[in-house]
Each structure stands twice: as structure tokens, then as C-alpha cells.
Length: 248
Ligand code: ADP
Ligand code: MG
Image (tube, rainbow, N blue to C red; front, side, top):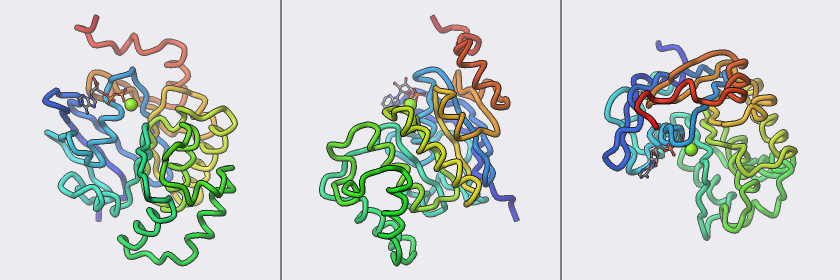
């Protein structure tokens, strides 16, 4: 009955006993791109971790729903099965497990057929200008920052989640790689109706992956929202207008 959306409402969260988020509201519908910007340490990555259920990041109030399903009570793997995907700011090395293995297991766990998976991986690797040799290498081990980000994007395009959180996908990518990766995600928003929450500091990512809405996370909540022009304004003026009154 509920309309399809990835909805965060009144989300408060603490990390190591410190409250970081104090009431975040966001709603992403299929095919939409929402950008979250904000100063370092504002809690952007914390938001992504709380949503996915990373240990140590505790939601203390509010809710997160995916097409009407409350995910905060679910273990991380079940959150993923509702259709949520996180491209991490700092992708983890997983020695001994290749991308191929990891994705086959994900498909199996979700009861999806792995037929055609290898072909899909090769096709998508080519589209992202990501060497096929990486498909067999242990996940993220000895990969450069840019290679890790392409790797995350490759997982996204093959898994085809309903909603993706991209945490600083631009960090480590050079201009050309950034264009390729952000264009590929933009295509997914159009062709597969992927809904995206993209965390970034830079407008250049948003020139290819076009946001419907831009939000500023500051002081533990969404301090401002606007259209794509807000990202340009922020690049000019910084976040001084959103500084907490008691901050130095
Ligand atoms: P952003 O991604 O916006 O730069 P983060 O979400 O990474 O900010 O961090 C927000 C705040 O939470 C920071 O003060 C950071 O030091 C703190 N924090 C994040 N993760 C942890 C952790 N695992 N343990 C302790 N403090 C953390
Ligand atoms: Mg961060």
C-alpha cells in the first residue's frame, strides 16, 4: 500500500556514546538522486553506517524504511535484501574472496540465479573501464582508491539494488574515471529506476549524476534542502552559514 521510497525519518544515532545524528529526514523515490553535502565530521558516513547497520552505530530514535519495510530491526544482510546497497567511503579489503565469489554468494543468498553473472560482470567491467583481471583478485586487496571505487560501482551495477547510498564515490577517482562512474550510475537511475543518496563534497560528481535535490547535513540534521543550484552555492560559500552556534 505504501508508496515506493527509501525513507529516513527523525533518525537519531550515536557512536561510541556520542550523539552524532539528532533527527534526519530524507525521502528518496525510485529514479531520484538526492545529494547530501556537509562539513567533515558532520555525520554523513555515520548516516550511511546506521542505515546499513554497521556494528557500533546505534539508531536511538526514528525509522528507516525501504518500500514500507522497516529495516532498523533487521541484520545487515537482510537490509541488503530489501534492496539497499552501500558503496563505502573506505571499501574494506577482503583477502581470499574475489568479487566473483562475493557476488555469486549474494545472488545465492537472495535466491537469484547466477546464470549470466560472469557475462554481466565482464560487460559492466568494460563499461566502467575496469580491468577484467580485477574480477578474480581478492576484493579490494592492494587496489588503489580509484580501483576500489570502480569495484564498488561494478557491484552496484551487477546487483541492481533498488536504492544505493554512495559515500564519497568521487574520492580517489581521477576526472575521467569520475565521469565514467557517475555517468554509469546516472544511466541506472534512468534505466533501472535506481534511487540514489549520494554523499559528496564536490559539484563535479553532480554534473554527470544529476541530483533532483541537494541537502546539507549539519548539526546532526538536514539543515537546508534545495535544487541542484544549492550544490553550486555551497562550493562557493562553504558551510559557514550552517556552523553550529557553539562551534569554534
Ligand atoms: P563525515 O562522513 O560527515 O565526515 P562521520 O560520520 O565520519 O562524518 O563522523 C561523524 C563524527 O562521528 C565524527 O566526529 C567522528 O569522529 C565520529 N565517529 C564516526 N565513526 C566513529 C567511530 N567508529 N568511533 C568513534 N567516533 C566515530
Ligand atoms: Mg564520511
